[in-house]
Length: 350
Image (tube, rainbow, N blue to C red; front, top):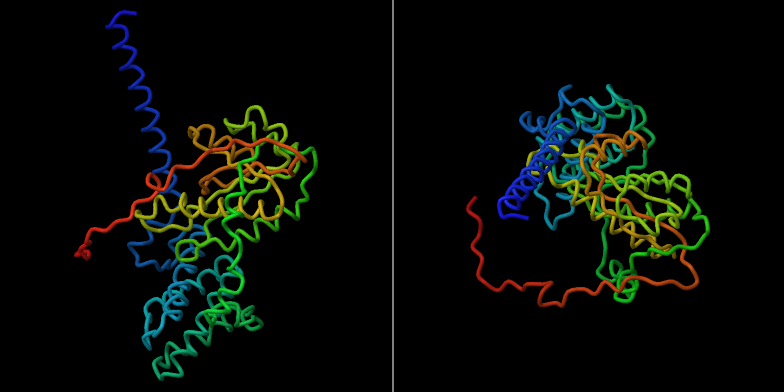
């Protein structure tokens, strides 16, 4: 092939890949613009009827509730802290109930407000008007009259009690998990998958918004159909008994700087889920979802996964065979994996 033909081929390929990149970046940008609550940030995170969905308003509520809860957990909370956040949370709670009805997050948020009230009342650091706003919430949201006010707040530990269940042989546990591509011809009990999700629910998330979600496709019929949209399961996909699609709801984010947070929180949840499956004696294999917009839309249309969710990955699940092989997948040595930074860092002036 002549040099000219090679050059033309190179630039045509460069143009094509650049167009594909632009298309996918535009797809992500448009989805974040459409489904997130980023526009509400200019209104100081108070809805006043502006957010479109219950998920978006729940995200605002959860973020503010967690701000109060974590402030109560520091060594010496400042009496009277966070009045603006508390007022905003109360207004958003009332709006949510009026527009969308009751949700368990309202219970958690109210419980946190009660702890805030008790903390500041004991220090004579709460105004009568704010105290009344908090105590009037059950008259606006009747379901709050029968809640357990211990569902949120803070937990007191001693060092020994906190570490009581942490001294496990995690080295062997972590090192014993491998991505599985051979599975036994045995049905996975759906309750076992639900238990794995329950264990993984302890995964941390930004402001405790818990954007992550597990979509369970139980049994080989559903698994096969879902895997037909994924491009990396050839040669073993027919052995997978069940598939969990991990996604993250963009409604939970409300600033441009959070545009990548779905991948972080969703990725944390996915790893927790795979460790949970391992602890329950199941094999799993993470399956990437690096696909073009057309395939992403097709999967969501076929499965009912909301278009406001970003698909993080699929996880193929199944029981282990009595004997099987895995890829060794040797890890990088520590000098390539880890950098110990010793230079003096200046404090930020931003």
